[in-house]
Each structure stands twice: as structure tokens, then as C-alpha cells.
Amino acid sequence: MGRPAQHAEATILECAKQLSAEIGPQNLTIASVAERAGAPVGSIYHRYASRDEILATVWLDLVEAFQESFLAPLSGDDDPVEAGLAAVSFTCRWVRRHPCEARLMLVHRREDFASERWSKSHRQRAERLTAQGAAGLRGYAARLLGRAGAAELRSVRFMLVDLPTAALRRDIEAGVVPSKSLEALLLDTCGYALRRNRAQAPRAK
Amino acid sequence: MGRPAQHAEATILECAKQLSAEIGPQNLTIASVAERAGAPVGSIYHRYASRDEILATVWLDLVEAFQESFLAPLSGDDDPVEAGLAAVSFTCRWVRRHPCEARLMLVHRREDFASERWSKSHRQRAERLTAQGAAGLRGYAARLLGRAGAAELRSVRFMLVDLPTAALRRDIEAGVVPSKSLEALLLDTCGYALRRNRAQAPRAK
DNA sequence: GGGGTATTAGAATAGGAATTCTAGAAAACT
DNA sequence: AGTTTTCTAGAATTCCTATTCTAATACCCC
Image 1 (cartoon, each protein chain N blue to C red):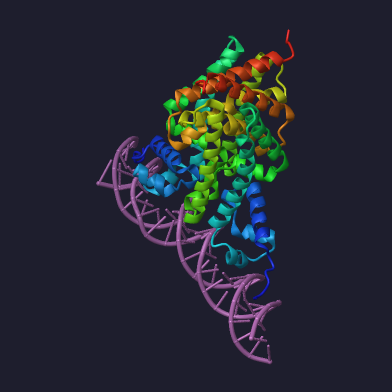
Image 2: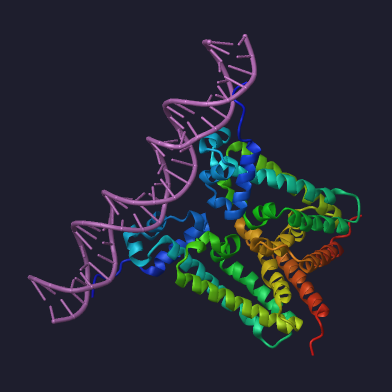
């Protein structure tokens, strides 16, 4: 019942996402979203309580989707080094396939999405996400290194998250698709680090 | 002649720098700088034409100082792999010694300092800086790889700049001093990548 | 001891953008 | 046909902060 919606929430979010990728989430104005979506600002506020909520939704949807696929290969039963490389490969492919999303995730940070002002429910969603990510990495650390303490978690995060980020960010920021040779260097480097760390790990049973 | 200054420019800049590190340059307000410096806003505008100019000065001073020291070891005549590792080590030490500055350089980006709105002179200073950095890296690429094309520059930048950034950023952001073991992992990884790349380079004479 | 000048002070102004508000419109239900 | 409910519209409001402005100060030099 009631008047049917003329502007879908999905459309609005999509516009907000694209615009954020183009001009940076810091610079996103409700007016610009409205213009791009062809909707009046009132209609946007009818669906979302605030700009912060829109930004939170864009970010959380994005990271949730990415993280789930990223973590999947890590929990298999194969050789942990192969699994780690699969995750890194996935990141490379994902970046290629989703340039807009890659920009948001690699060149911007959560705080650019006003995360300090998120409502409790968004904060919780973010915490859950962080916890899931940490859990996935910890499980992987246990498989690769035999232990999953703070130091192991940090090593694994460096190799599987920070290293790919470092390799890809610059090109993404410049709007360029990362070259195959850079990806090769990245994978090779990750492979080395993974093997070296495994070798140095205290031999688990 | 004239009334002597009660508030030094250096003090104002220092306050702006500290505050930026604490709350992020995006959130820096002139009022907050004035408060911290114990000066009225008018006195700040008497010295700096705008907020953008203050931010530009903070960023450029910082990056200039860092970059000069960072590039120094790269242009020596020693083994290029050692030279590269020296530069990375320098970054680690610098981060340890300058936590406030490290925050600004590693967790924030130039655009957070309003670089799109910088005046021509600040832009030029930034360009010069970028050019110097690129030149330094290109020279190093020539020594390590025998060539200094776009691909070589990118590899070198990944190994000497992006990789350390990625390794250290997370801790810096959390306000933690990066652990020795992480630094060791970083150096080891860089060392591997440098050697591998050198080995694969077309044998220069 | 008066003029000239750089600085201090902080109140007033201005502009940009988020958010609110009031009317009106378009279905669905009865 | 009237009522209810949900949405559209966009103008008006509010907030926040950069920037401007005017007056007052303090020191140097003559």
C-alpha cells in the first residue's frame, strides 16, 4: 500500500558508490547523489537517515562481499602456501573486475566513510566484519605456522593483505589496471614470504 | 619596526602538524590550531593566507625532509641490493623516531591535505618533489636492473616505497611502534624481491 | 612623545552542505 | 469516492567553519 517508489534504494546506493569512487567519499554530497540518481534530496532522506548511513552502507556492503570471497580459499585443506597464493590471486582478479570498488577499498580508508560517526548498528556490523577477518586469518596462521598468536596474525596479514594492497593501490589510484608483470612480482614475493615463514615456524606436530 | 611577533610561525606550524596527526588533516580547523597555539585566529591569518596553505606547508616540509634522507643511500656506489635495504631500514628507523610525522605520511595521503586546492607555488613544490623522487628511483632502477623504463620504475617503487608503507602503516595507525619482527620480515621480503628482480634483469654490460 | 608599522584580538560575515519541513501526488484498500 | 499510507519535491533552516574586518596594541625610529 502507499505510493510506489520511483527511486530504488539500490539505485541510490549505486550512485553514491560510483560518486564516492570518483570524487572520494569525503567529498560526497547528498545533493550530488540526488542529482546523479535523478531524485530529490527529500527522497534520499526518506530512505536513509543521514549521509553517514549511506557511506556506512556503501563501505560495509563492499567489504563484506570482498572479504567473504577472499577468506574462502584460506580455510581449505590444501597446501597453505597454495591457499595463500589463491587468496592473493583472487584479490588481483577482483581488482581487475571491479575497478570502482577497488578504488573505494584500496585507495580510501574506513574513516573516509565517516566511520567515527556511524550508529551503533553500523559499528557492530563493522566489528563483526573485523572479527571475521581476524578469525579467518588466525585460522590460516595456525595452518601455515602452527601457531596463531598476535605475531603470527600480523605476519599473515602482512603477506596476504598489506602486500597486495601495496602492490595494487598505486595503479588503482591512477585509474590504471595493474599490469600482469606487477601481479607476477606480487605473487612471487608473497610466495617467497609464505614459504620462508613456514620454514621458520616452530615445527608443529 | 612594528610590534614584535608573539607567536612564531614555527609554533603555529608545529601545532598544526601535531593536531593533524592526532585528528587527521581533514579535520583540522583554524580555531583548533589557534587554541593549541594560544593565538587568536587573526594572528594565524596574518601569517598564512588560508587553511590550505598551512596544510600544504606541513605536508611539503615533511615529505621534503623525509625524501631527501630516504633517497641518499640509493645513489651510492655500493651493491644496489644493500643500498635498497639501507633505504628501507632508514624508513623503519625514521618511523620509530618520528611517530607523529610517520602518521601524517603513512596513514594520510596528500589529498587529505587539500592538495587539489593548493596554490600554484605549492603545486610546483609538490611537482618538484615528485620529480626528484622519481629521478632518484629511476637512477636506482638503472643500477639495479640495468634499465629505467616505466616497468622498472614501478618495480622499484613497489619494493622500496609501497612495501614498507604497507608493512608499517597498520601499526602506525594503531599508534603502536612496529615490532622488530615485522621489520625483519619486511627487510627479508624486500631483500628477496630486490635480488630476484636483479637476477631476472636483462644482463647489463 | 609622535608617527609608522607589524601584530594581536576576536567579533562579524559568508558560504557550503546536511538536515528538516510542508505540500502535494500516487497508489492501495474499503 | 474517500481514506490511508508511502513517496516525491524542493524550499527553508541550521550548523559549522573559513575568512574578513575593524579596532586596539606595542614597539622602532625620528
